[in-house]
Image (cartoon, rainbow, N blue to C red):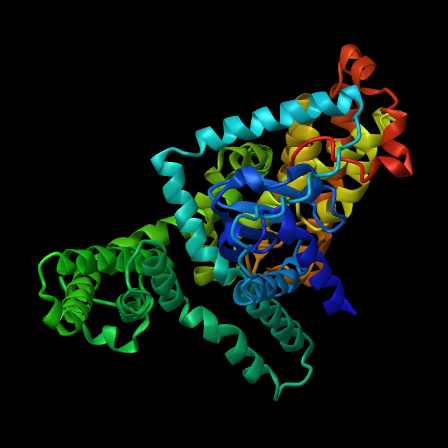
Length: 511
């Protein structure tokens, strides 16, 4: 039955994005189905956002449909299968002189309430402005770096949860014979993550993936301990994912350079050899030292920051994370999270940054309470809140707080308060983090780990969420609206929007 539901969702999405011939590539991350389209004008945005399974859409370099964690991993294979089936079943060509049947016109959307239309315009304008800002070379590079690490998140989550289970069994003294096996399962991926980073880096930047993986594999090879470079012995894994990223980028450049002058008849022999040799030597006698120093500095700084200025650092990090997301700069944190996980087993930054989502949830609940007559917006909030509690914030950000303006600022205040709470306890000695990246909100509980014990760790994280919810709610309820905003927004929607004949209700803003 679940498969039928996922296939039905995929079947509903396909015609609304222009059909199989309009799709050039399909992928997914933790929450979004990412589709590359030939012609975006064929997408029926409003009908797509009205689908029950769709939590929102994001227009970026790819067209991204937010389905939520778990759901997207099940819908994507069904969507790929439907596209493949449609392409293999070639439709008969129309008879000579016969015009092809026109595509059915989209159903007329119901006339929305004035408030919903205004919010939709604001949301569209904000997203257009954000898309323009994110087109800078630096942000495009960050997006490509994110594309390297996003495919690794499922393995990080699975191994992180197994590591947490293994730690619990170790502390309780249960099933001692199983502990070494779980340790091997949870640590195997992390011991070779550099290889996967190298593979994905070469793939993303236009090189041969396996050559990028081969260059990065040098970093984790145990035999590097025998190499004496500049009077120092290398350590296996030195440089971590940052070194792997740099090694693979270099391999891509060497490979492209070789292709400019190596004869085609010798390419299969010369290009791979020179690519691995040159990038390997530079990695061993340069990149591993440099990346190792940077990785160590990142870990030292993060530990020092939260140990000495925990409350203030948490306030700043939690309060600024939503704006970072809006600017696309949060992608720069992915390699930092991964580096911290490599060094200590968890990233201390993620639980603090997750407080931004708590502030967002609290702000959305306050908007719900302050606008009792705006049924359209309240419907959007009700449908998006469950995902918000699980850390999927796009529907609430793009559909509620960001277009409204002031509630976005008060949501940041809630995130700052929750971050300060978690940071304070870190400063007091109850430091902890997440063993994987990707999940947030309540979904982060299974991935928490720390030196103070699971009870204290869970209590502090839960307390931070509660503070974020409460402060985000209170700040938005009392300071999130002017009198003019309340007069304009707290109105009844068009009664036609609720009639069965009107069709599905539109979302108030694009997500």
